[in-house]
Amino acid sequence: MELRIPETGMIKEQCMTIDREVVIIYGYNNSGKTSFLKAASEVFHQKMMESFLLKKESELSIYIPTNRLMLSEAKTEDVKLKDLEEFLYYQRDSQRDYNLHLKRIRDSYMANEVICRAVRQAVKEIFDVEITDTGARYSDGIENVINIYLNIVWAMFWDKDITALAEEQFQKQIAAKKIYVLIDEIEMFLHVNIQEKLIGSLRESFRNCCFILTTHSPLLLTRYRNMAVYNIEAGVLYPVDSELYYEDLDIVYEELFSVGELPDKVREAINYLGQVIMREVSADKEKIESIEKAVVKEYPNLFRKYNRIFAKAKDI
Image 1 (cartoon, rainbow, N blue to C red):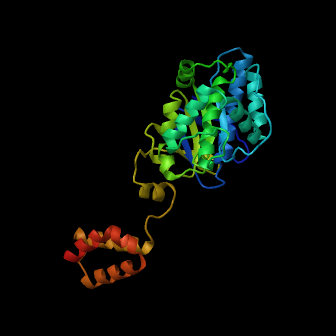
Image 2: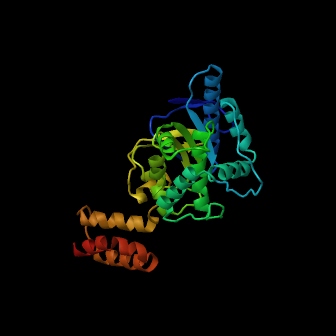
Image 3: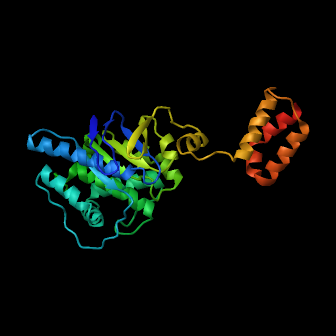
């Protein structure tokens, strides 16, 4: 699928090809991640509205702003939507009071035994935590994952009566239904151990969905194989062509996030020692010992990491 994104605020006009099951966008603060995701969501909405007016089948999309938590205590009723047009308008309107939307789907869908069991299982697999009281308040990370899961399920069943939902029907629907799921800052509130398995877990639950995500997490860029990665700068997406699956995180930090693996002083020392070991320069034992003392004193953790290089250089 190709999305033509119009110029919107800081987002420049551009095309985005979605040909992977997971698309992840990273970038600095104020580079346009959230704005791009909202612009993409609006394009999806326009496509769905056109299909609705032309009475054609349409693939659904849903935008999930995960930096919000379910705090509303309002009494709610199940959302009854008669057609796709109402579904689209409801999605747009829900952004104004997203907490109320979360409370609505939490109240209605967690009351369903089949859906509640699926959510409990997902939380168990991701966090290794048993949810016993569906009305209780859990950690922000668990609440976030529950909200993501329920939003996707809601987008799959919004036009269906779930009161008599059978397990087989539920599993068939979530495995087969295709939805473009746009999630902003998916790693919010999540420990890195949870981040490591989150995308894989969502893909396992919703096997036919496409996930378009934004993140600040270097780890997320390396933990799923069939993924397209983009860097966004000043509202423009730039594809990352290198394979990042289980790439060394030091390389990811340095090359993609511009965070230096080593202080300049240590980098220069390691480069010099490497030249000594490769016989590119003559060994200066006094210089090597001086470098070693300075690194041991100022950067003991880095010395432990590179002590073999020091030892080899001293043996030359």
